[in-house]
Picture 1 (cartoon, rainbow, N blue to C red):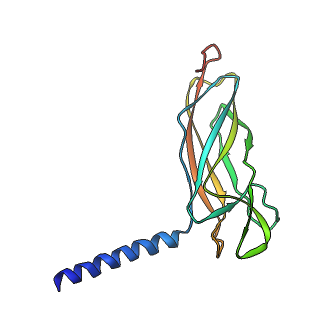
Picture 2: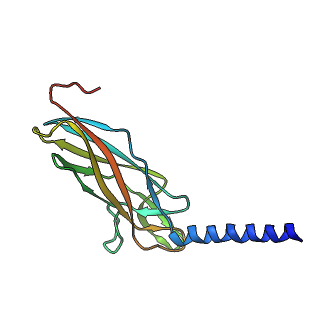
Picture 3: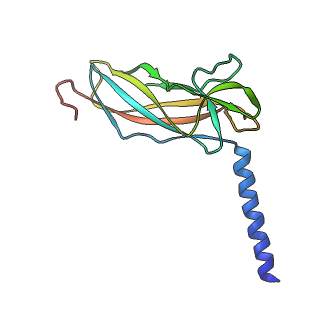
Length: 166
């Protein structure tokens, strides 16, 4: 009897954890790359890896319809470092049961966003945090969820112009 009681309590605990995870909804995760080095006065390229949770998709940066919420990266560069360009991958045209006659431009699984940065010539050598958020709206085969933000932070190392980068 006692063992049955503990089994029921454990099962209820697992159900509560599963319900809490479902209530949070789908997510897109970010894995910060290693420190990226840029010479003062020069450009550098950063590849930001993202992963859409299993069973979900997010609209691409350029969805086919205006009413769909695009995936968008908003960055707050540190003083002395500028973001000159953000490149998004092309979405994959996919149909879903909720709209079988419509192709949606989406990201699923892993996708990368490339960011071009420029360290100003007089930027003091050092390591700087590049912060921001990826805004997205995720959906599964039945429903779309409210838009969410995934915070990002990565480190950019600025070195003097006369230092070689490997």
